[in-house]
Every structure is written in C-alpha cells, then in structure tokens.
Length: 408
Image (spheres, rainbow, N blue to C red):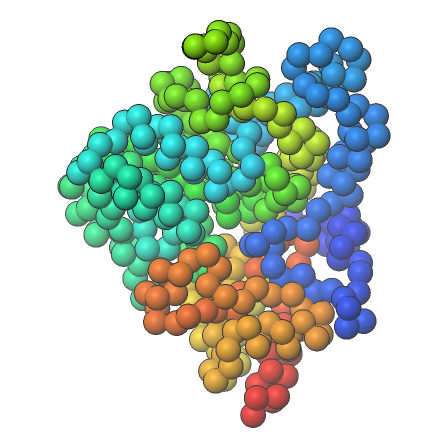
C-alpha cells in the first residue's frame, strides 16, 4: 500500500510555506529533525489551553488531567516499541541524554578500570563522547567495530572484538550519515553470548521503521521525539526492568524521591526514579500524539515509502558527474543520501541549494570520526521521510546540476 502523499503533506504546515528566497520549501533534512503534523501541534496547544498544570502530586482537575495525558503518552510509547511495561519508559530530553543517563548510572556503578566498551566507527558523537568521558574518568577501554568501504559494519571484526569480553556493546541501529541499517538483533544476540549488555541508539531507526525491543532483546534503547514528528525537548530511554531497578538515580530533586530526610533519601519507583523535577509535560503529550500519528499512517508503509524514495534518489544522484555517494546500496540503508560534489565544499552546495528552497544538511553531522575514516571533512546530506516525494528528489538533482554550473 502506497502512502497518500497529498493528504500527508497537508498535515504538515511547514511544507506549505515558502523560504526567504520566495520559493516553495523542499525539506530534505528530516534526519536532523522532522517536521511536525497538525495533530502534534494541536495536542500541545490543547494541553496549554485547557489542561496546563504540574503532574503527579496535585488533586485538582487540571493536575489530574495533565497527569493522565503525561502518563498516557508513556503508555503509547511503550506500545509503539513493544515494551513489556510502561515502567520501562524513562522520559529524557533526547537521545543524547538517554545515553548519558546509562553512562552516569549503569556504567559508573558497574564498570571499573580495564573493562571494555565496544562501539562502532559510525557512531554519532552522542554515543562516543559519554564513553570517552568515562574512559578518562574510570580508565575503561574502548574498542571499535570497523566500517567497510561500502559503509557496512565489519561483522567478522565484531566477533573477534567480542572475544575481548566487553561489558557493554553500544551501537546505532541506523547511521545518521551513511543510512546503514545495522543487523541489531544479531549484534545483540552475539553481545549477550559474550556476556555483554547492549545499548541501541535508535534515534534514526525508531522514526522510520518498526522497532520491537522484545524481538531485538535490547537491554537499552534510546531515541528522540523530534525526529519522529514530535516536539523537541523530550526523548526516551527504554531499559530492561532488572537493569533499571539496579541503577542508581541520575539526577536528584523533586519527584524522583519516595522519602527525604535531612541526611538521606529513598528513591522513587520506576520510572520516576530517573525523572527529577518538573518534566517536559507538553512535549510528552506531543510525543504521544506523534506516536498516534505514525501508528495511524503505519510504520511498515512509511518504511516502504522511504525505501522507494531513497532508491530513486541514489539513482538520480549517481547520474550526476562529480557526485560521490557514501554508504551502502538502497536495500541496506534508510532514507539518507550523504554525498560530496567534486571541487565544491558541502557548505557551498547546501547554501546554493537553499536559493531554490531545498533544505539539506552540510557538515560532519556529529560524526567526525566517520568522516575522517573516509578522508573527508564533511558531506552534504539529503534525508527523506514519509512526506517527501520523487518530484522533490528531481528538484534536488536539478539543484546539484546548478551548483556544478556555478562552479564551472
């Protein structure tokens, strides 16, 4: 079943606007952040207009409504990733904070000097820097699964590195630069066989295809609302219940406590143990609305549409002389096309495309080591979501031809 793109695009107000250049917007930057549908904007607006109050402790009508909306969104998120219980859904600010939470709690409580963490060369800085800080602070050792020339993880090297008995394997399910979709279930199975727990960075996977934490057997999964049609400022950490129960609190303050005395405290039960202070209530409501929206459209339909668009985009870009694409073929990747244009800096490519209203990202995309691996400082990156069309891909290709003409 193909998506009804005309109606879907009407759901996103930003897609109806013109840019400052006076041309229609062609938004190809959803890997950085997605646009928001009216359902999400409306849900947050309704919350602030009708139910705005702090949660959990109030007994008046607005407090009870706010609490129900906030916790209802948690239930929706749990169902969306097939978590066994909503108690295992921890609200954070974003994927970065979710990974840092694990680093500051589970890792600091369980890892000592000389023990190993296994990462990959394609990680976003959010899944590198927290572990580098831990390395400096605690003396843990970091190993890295290599990336092959065609943008895949070297799984033979992975198996060899597992023989070094890492305590944690942390990896992205889908690369934000290469688009590579890694074999997460198999990688987790091998990690568990080696005695490690597995953390999955799902920032790019959860918005784009069906992710089932029970089928994966993931110990932790981190993702952000703003990449899946939801608002900025709220993210999720899923964890297995026994791990979460064993972990110390992350931040101290209100709502994460059960009892406080002058010289001691008892932490709250899950999930509240990890949610100190007044949370992003309206943003959680928006996340719940985004889950409803994506569920109604259908994650399998979204994944199929993105595959079709990505396949077409790679074909069009490969036709352009001087364009070099990075990452695997369309059957092994999500909706990302990172490329360079011979003789033109990626930032110049992005700025010139913007004159025609085409929004792409340029830079190292918070993956500097991966760019160093390929011997380049930066790439231009077009990324696709449920609302993008083949006509927009054609505009991108035409725009790159214009860049070539401008630079001779």
